[in-house]
Image 1 (spheres, each protein chain N blue to C red):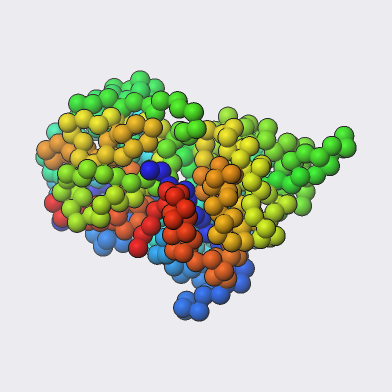
Image 2 (image 1 turned 30 degrees about the horizontal axis):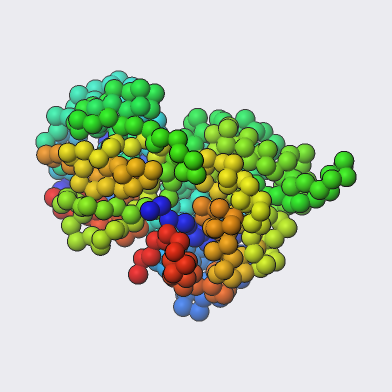
Length: 258
Length: 195
């Protein structure tokens, strides 16, 4: 049976993880390759590496990191941050990334999704959507796509945009609710469910995971195909093997590696 | 031992190369007929679309070469589909090593296509699955699949049961991506390289 996926996300700057990590058994907790390898060994189903600096100087360091990750781990991984051209994607895939994630550049230039899907195939094009429930200029509350780490609202309505990026050739959606992100109160279930039911491509839910039950909720009520989190894994508030065992015990299909 | 990865417009094959690096075998990435013929093992990877890949193989004469190879050949993902008779993906006539037609997953409410992620394989009957744990999970990304047929040596179930692996004579094929399928995928690659 196709399993639900658990995906740790690593924010990287100049080749090192930026959010504090709390793994005493790691030689160097800031080493993004070593941390990724640990998660892979623990049974993570995929990894996401985000280049949060995404500067010109940082880019070559990031590509070098992607190459080292690809050499080391034997599960799929997605890379994102500052990707805005076919050349960017080509360099990252050539370095060994399995998928790339685009966000602001897709909002600025939606045709980029079509171009990338045509050039590299939909299977490796993830479109990340940062969304926030806000009052629009018409005075009604709506889910609106945001860019710049969720700070800058766009004109795009999240549900319509999710459908559009799929129609343009995205292979997967990474949906982050800025309303729940960092709260540890659980994923945005209603919105995730709405988007996942409308989509014929997998939806990765992100933002708000605080305990194991939140993952159960996002896979059932939220209808997500994958759940992504960062700090709760980095700080070992949740161990991946425990989480997967817990979800399997609750009758969700999981890939148990031990 | 000489291992060749067949070079064609198959998208990203970098992870296949890294997987072989991890196992510790040298390989050549080439479309040269003499090099391919003289290899001990041939890997025919694939990411992408069937008709474009087939036209490229025809252009290079690889569509004639591959079916005549006598050493162990392993096709993965689209590589496996191109080794079948026909693919519904843009109605493509393929190489016909396996006498079976590749079909699109039927539209089914609540079941997304592509079939993307980790799924378990069952009913193994291949040298490549030797010493594998039962119901092993491997990583799939595909919208088309070969139905279960006389060459099926491992099955997977998504919407319908389909061929996760095929085998006939010296030809082996896997629908999933061995190179990113964790320790299970690595074991399958090692078993192939040991043939």
